[in-house]
Length: 140
Image 1 (cartoon, rainbow, N blue to C red):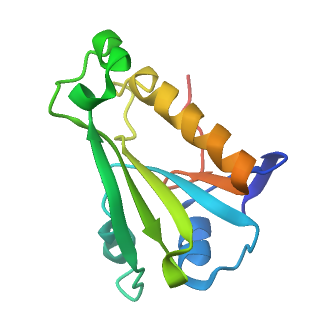
Image 2: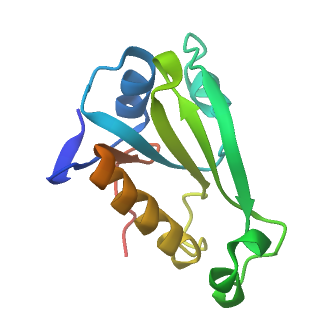
C-alpha cells in the first residue's frame, strides 16, 4: 500500500505501481514516477510475467536534450535521462520512468531536477505515486 508523504504525493514499491497501472486501484493517482534500473514498461512484466500493462510513448529525453541541466551532469550526453508515456488502463496515467540502478555509485542528483518538476506538475493536475522496486530508501 502506498504511503502518503503529503497531499497528492505518495511513495511505494513496484507492486503498488503495478496495481495502479493494471487495475486503477488508487483512483486519485494520475502520475507515476518510476525509478527503476530500466525505463521500459516491460520491466513490470519481467518482474511478474502475468502483468500486461498498456503504454504509449510520449517522449524520451537524453542528457543532451536537457539543456542547462546537462551542463552540470557527469552523465554521457547520449544517456537516457527519462522517458514519458501514457500508461495503464485506457492510457489515463502519465508515467515518467527514470533509469536508475539501486547502487551507492548512482548519482541521484543528476536526475533530481527533472523528477521534482514532474512531481510538481503532477501534484497540480492530480496525485503522484513515486516508486522504486522495493519502496525502501537507500541507506546513507
